[in-house]
Image (cartoon, rainbow, N blue to C red):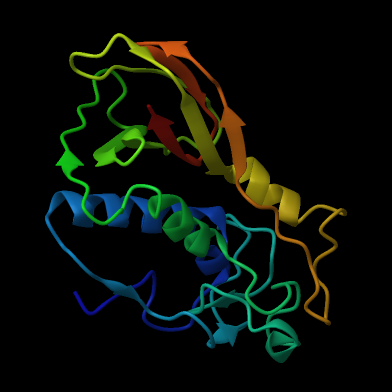
Length: 219
């Protein structure tokens, strides 16, 4: 595929919020399941804007948006104050970062089946050099989801690692510790969190935080 994106004109604040990040991550999962071998996002750098939809009815702490998924740094200011230093990753870029743990050359797509809450929970899976990779989404804005992850024919795991980017991490970037908006473009955007859970019995019980994307590597 040539280009995918969240909007074709006047990107609003959702383009740099957790909402587009969740959209991007699930698009990648659906494209993987459909057998798409390569796609690109419009665009990496450039296209920061304050002219899009900044309505309070939309989720996002910042008052800018952009086609870009990486900050242009000081070049963004004053159009995108608070986008961070050059190369700062938006939530959409974080979706690609997490998905890179699943999209590994030489690996195979697996069938992931969700039972129970199929409205809020989405799942994707693939083989992984270290075992199995499972990508889990919680599309509920306010409620955590308890899930049980089972692998056919496997009753234990020697190691489990979970990498998460969620609404709380995005919100942290808009807190006083992140200090946006910053005209100099030096705000701090919080990175995904990683939990090494060690040896685990399967099925594996996990809590998916609100509006979260989670990569689970099961060895």
